[in-house]
Amino acid sequence: MARRRRIGDSLATLGGARPELLEAAPGARPRFVALGGVLLSTGGLAVLSMAFAVAMALGVWWPIALLVGLGWGFVVVNLDRMLLVGMAHDASVGRNIALAIPRLGLALVLGVVIATPLTLQVFHKEIDTEIVTMQAEAADEYRTSLEADARFAGVPELARQVVLEEQIVATGGAADPALAGVQAEVAAKQTALDEALTTSRDLQARAQCELDGTCGTGEAGTGTAYQSARAAADAAAAAVVAARDALDDARASATDAAARSLSLAQSSLATDSAQLERLTAEQDRLQAEFDAANSGSGGILLRLEALDRLSDSNSTLWAAKTMLSLLFLSVEMLPVLVKLLLNFGPPTAYDRLAALRDDGDVEVEELQKQSRFEVAQAQEELLVMAETERVDRQKQAILARRRAAVAAVQQSPQAPVPAAAEAAGAPGEDPLRALWDTGPIRLARSAARTVRTARRRPGVPV
Image: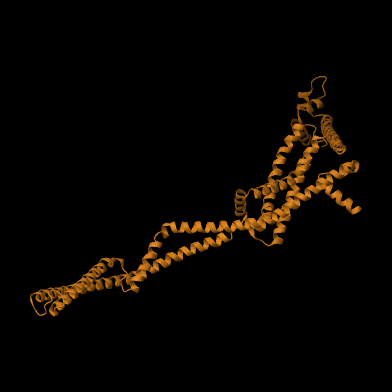
């Protein structure tokens, strides 16, 4: 029971209660205990929120993140308690609202800061899936940007050139597109030769059957018809020879062109391959660096963006996220709202006792201030009186020494009346009083002069 009471007292103190007033107004204790519990609840949410935030943003070990969260929770509880303690009961609605607005604003900011990591943690599975998609899209966009980069704009053409050069080398130069004309000419010459061969064979067969008498005139022998057929066949044979010579010449030209193309492709292939390899390696390096950074970019900002994308495409998730955020905001703003609502009501016994105690403390402090003032004033008066007495004593001592000196001078028969006494010795006035009134410096000089005169005269005691 005693332990529960100590815990309740601690919660009440945390909620802004004054223990000495709770003893006089125990009915207010449950309210402050509840406020202290609410503050602990907001502090617990702040601990979890900061632990999740540190783990997501920095990827630190969970015990370290929890320690950081405990520090943040202490700060939040202290701020919330400051907001509560600063809202004393006031009968004016306007002043209550004016005091509550900045506190509610600060509580709202704290609520947003606390609610964001908690909301992200609740939807972390959906967010992780969306982040994978976003990272893939970012990688594709970066790859496209690299391809459009001026440094790598010629890579596709250079790759095609290298492939063509490899084909030219593999085919001995025959794959060079520049040889298309020569190869077309060879094909044309081959076609002409084939046609000439066909024509020559036909004419040879006709001449032979004309000789045999199996065709044409039907008469065997070397007649006029045969001779005509033979002449046509010989002409066709000569055409075949000419077509074959032309084909050989075309093939020779094509072979020479292929050899030149092969030599050129071999010399260009090494340079182009090295250039292509260098550009491709640089492109791969940049892409790999981006992929490494992209795969490790699952921080709070990316997770917030992923949650926004999910909310835009899924109304159910948007509603759940909104309600969850409002819940965390309400928990954070609850102490200030409760305190504000309590201030709108009539003052409780605790409030009246607090006002009386504060007014009494002010009155006691004013009395103490007045007492200190009177004591200081009396001390100053005593100092003035003591200083006045000291000055009077010094004055009497100076007068006594002066009277002694004057009496000593008057006892001597030759001693003249001091000039100072004559100057001040008006009828009916005390010459010593006149000397005193001339000022301390003149008096001191006159006394010193009289003493020196007395010392110079014999018989005058000093």
